[in-house]
Image (tube, rainbow, N blue to C red):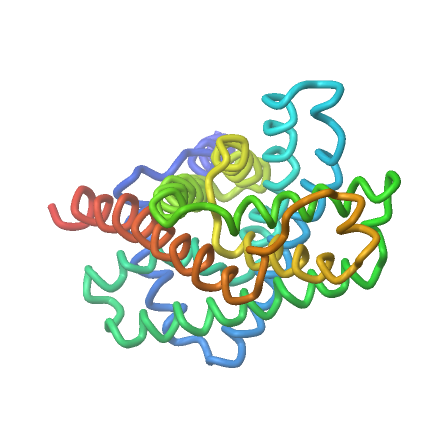
Length: 281
């Protein structure tokens, strides 16, 4: 009987208050991690999100022709969610998820300078890992798949992102990381792997299917597109006007506004509000 009760207790979900308290502890632990290890974990996370992005491109390259735009968006989000699963269950440091460390800072478990140091280190590591994976995927020549359909899809996505206006980029960034941080929050509700998988799946599927913007995902999508831009045959085949697809526009027109939006969505709408609701009682 005691074993059955023990199993029931292990199967119980943590309350929102318990999750908030757990994040206070996690933030304190992360702030003590050596910078080199934090950076390496961040490189891995950038690559993991890139894997999700690559499979999303592969699955959706021609799907809309047969299943329509809505189902294509859904499938892209469904497969992209593997990226966060690899981060959460495999163990890695993702900038957007680490926006929740604001809880530790507001509850005075972590100093502001340590929070900023973590964010900067993880952001740079994510960037390195994402670009590294983009380069490896490019060198694999997989963009030739389906008569270059995969490459055209990747170019189209990157070009669309760099042509967003600032307000749209920031707004989509807010909406994106609101959902991403809720996914990370939900994964803390239970300790079993299946629960964590489903906690990752639904919010991530929702943000991708909705067309929101994730800065770390864009660290893969856009460098990949920029590399593909140097393939003349592919560019000619795509018929796209790629004049705005440049490294400077990637950084200043897309990545910076999306990052600002992601911080607002994760650090304020989830981290700060939940801290106020469940930590400061």
